[in-house]
Image 1 (cartoon, protein in one colour):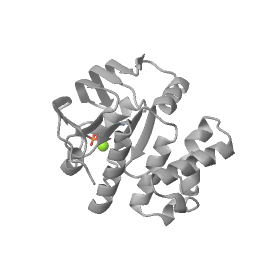
Image 2: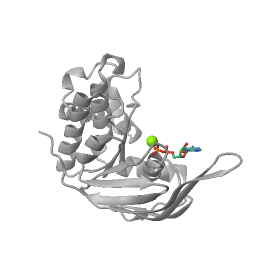
Image 3: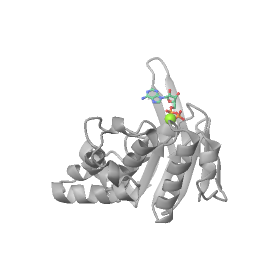
Length: 230
Ligand code: ADP
Ligand code: MG
C-alpha cells in the first residue's frame, strides 16, 4: 500500500535547520492498522503529513499504491489526497456553520458529485457511525465523540485506501476514546488500512502494529496482539 525509504525532512527555523526525520524506512500493507508513537516533537505529525501529501519530504522515496509521490503539482497532490486518503484530526476540523450531514458530504462536493447523491451517501455514512439522528445538527450541538464520528464519516465517504488519524482521541475522555477506537477497529476489520498517531499506550495496544519514532528514526516496529474492543 505504501513504501517509504530513507526519508528525510528538515524544517528551516531561521538560523538553524531542524532535522526531524533522519532516514525513515516503513512499509505498510493493505488492511494494516498501525500506530505511530513517540514523544512530543519526535516528528509523528510530520511523518503523517508527508504520508498524507500535506507536506513534502526533502529526500528519500515515498510510493503510495504504486505511485511515486515526488514533485507533485498542487493539483496532482489534491487529486491523490482525494483519491487515496481520508484524514481525521485531534481537533475534528469540522466546518462550524455546516450541519453534520453537510460536513460529511463535503469531500463529494469537491469530487463534483451532485447534491442528491452526496446527501444520500452522507446519510449512509452517518448511519454507519451511529449518528443518523444528528444529521441536521451543527458541530457545536455535538459532543466531542460525536464530532469525531462525523469526522470519521467524512474521511470514509470517498472510500479512501488509507485513513490517517493524528491523535484522534487526544481531545476525548477515556470512555469516548474507547468508542472511537472500537469504531476504528470495526472499519479496519472491513478492510480499511488505518494509520493512527497517538501518545496513548492504550490506544496503540488497540491497533495491530506499533511503530515508535525516536531521534528522527524508527526505534522499533512490532506487530502486536491487538486488544480487541467489544
Ligand atoms: P510530533 O507530532 O511528534 O509532536 P511534529 O512532527 O509536529 O512532532 O514536530 C516535530 C518537530 O518539528 C518539532 O520540534 C516541531 O516544533 C517542528 N516543526 C513541526 N512543523 C514545523 C514547521 N512547519 N516549521 C518549523 N518547525 C516545525
Ligand atoms: Mg503531532
